[in-house]
Image (cartoon, rainbow, N blue to C red; front, side, top):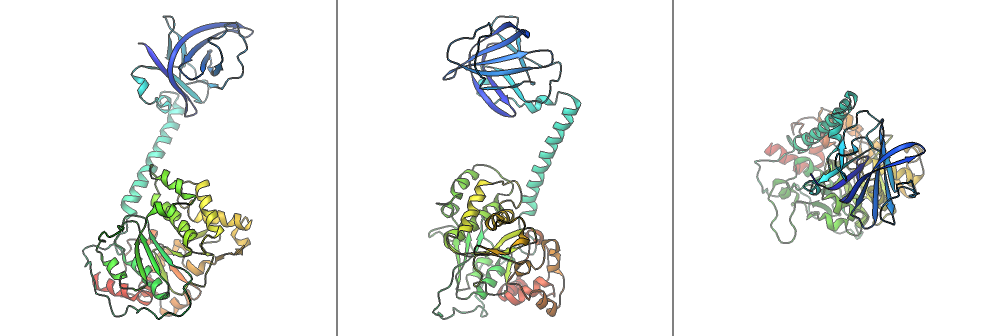
Length: 479
């Protein structure tokens, strides 16, 4: 069968894929003995020659660029190869007919699988190169075991990610709203709009929903309500990607209806492309939309919050916070989750602050969307260490105008102890526990789906009753 092309792969990267103008075998006798070479003249802008040396234990390939047609068979100097490496997956062999090169398996194992080459038929020229990993399955038992282990690990990881997003990733249980009324009358307990105090508010309070969901669950509703009650003079802006823009009619859900009762709560559509425009995140967002990643929604949320605060300034809160106190005195601050890591569930920064700008640059420079938290808590931690020129968070809590608040400020209960929110607690213990706390992070990633009675003495039920009474009343009525 006539050979029409070839491809060359080195360490998993395809170096060359081209039509073949001509190929031939030559023999060269030098100081090291007789050497056979397969010479391929490829159809490229400049003349390239690919030489395959063969031997009993293996061989090498060398890619040369020549300024003249043909090669000397007497060992003339050819200059330094453009690329060279050992081959293992296959090599050329002098065929029975002149001008032909054929692929052959090696009888001996010369070492690691560095490179592969193969000549293509005319029908194969339009298809993708074969995968050398499949060839390794036919090699030594040790190689087969390693290959099967790698394939099994990747398959297990993929399945676990799918299970997470399709089963665990969606809110459910106590928080999921279904078969509930879509319109509710605004209760009398909603605070009226306060008279202007003459002091302009320091900035907006932002919540983000980067998925397409538009039906806030009860914890989401409690977060927004508690923030609205703690800051009656400040706009509380809820940005939701699923909300339509313009004059389009909005979805009708209990959560949207109830939150609309608060005069300082604003529900707005979230346009991620517009948010990232004119920031270092714009090119990243354009690229990430064209590929699949396991933690894309959390990563989008991580990117959105730093872009939002850099562009507009203000306070950002995750939708699983319950706000206890006024946060407006906290500026250029973030919370410490533990002695080793910061957390971006709460952020408070001035507009165009350089710390947020550095976070956006680091987000792109060290991007890895396959590691949970790499673009969130770990990003903030490494940027703060660089900002303060420290190795450990214990060395400094504030530097260059940025402050890290202690864990009790926003994370009084570590994520490992999230079940404590569903345990009974006395009012006295509750007051003592939250004495130095501005807002409580409920760790929804861990606690979602866990049920509790709205009328119980559980810590979370008492927080709902005290800091988001409108949501708490709806829970008692509809759950």
